[in-house]
Structures are given as structure tokens and as C-alpha cells.
Length: 124
Image (cartoon, rainbow, N blue to C red; front, top):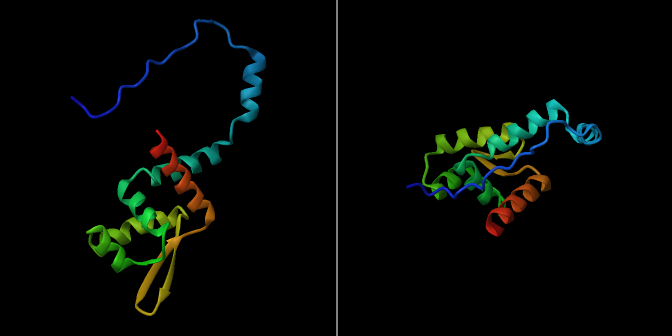
């Protein structure tokens, strides 16, 4: 037995022909391939629970890598590896202060994306 919720049955049309006007309208709203790939990459980056937990910490405050690793119960190297993915996706940014490197969310867009995703999960 799995813990996954049952998926609703998928319904499909019984018609044989597409509505040309609807197809034209839908095509007018489709995003460009490059944009779709960029968005898919962003969601792929967010598909890792450790990275989501890191974002949850950084949504509240700027944190040193060492402190973040301690809070997560992970090694600094492993956390730095995950932060690299988040930096590459422009979700977080770093600031060096002497021997310490502090991370924070990149901007308010990331904060909003995270907050809306969390709200959706909690609401569901």
C-alpha cells in the first residue's frame, strides 16, 4: 500500500476533430520553448526537499553556510552543493564577510514564489 493519494480519472474528448478557432486561440497563449524550458528548470531545482528547506530558512533571514548546515543537520559541503544549484537558478545570492559566506533569497520574486507555493501546499 502506498501513501500517494489516488489520482482522479483523466477524461478526454470523444470528438474526432479539433475546433480550429480554439486551437488558434490556445496557440496564441503558448509560451515560447525557451521560456518553457527555463521554467521547467526552475521547478526541477525546486523539486528537491533539501533545497526547499534551505529556501524556507533563507525566506526568514540571511544565514551563514556553516549555521545553515548545522540547522539542517548536514555537512557544510553538502549544503554548499545544494546552494550551488540554487545560485545557478538565481534563487539565492551570496555575500562574503571575512571568512564567512552568507546566503539570502535573491529577490522578492523568489520570496513570492516560495510563499505562494507554500500557501498552495498548505491550502490543499
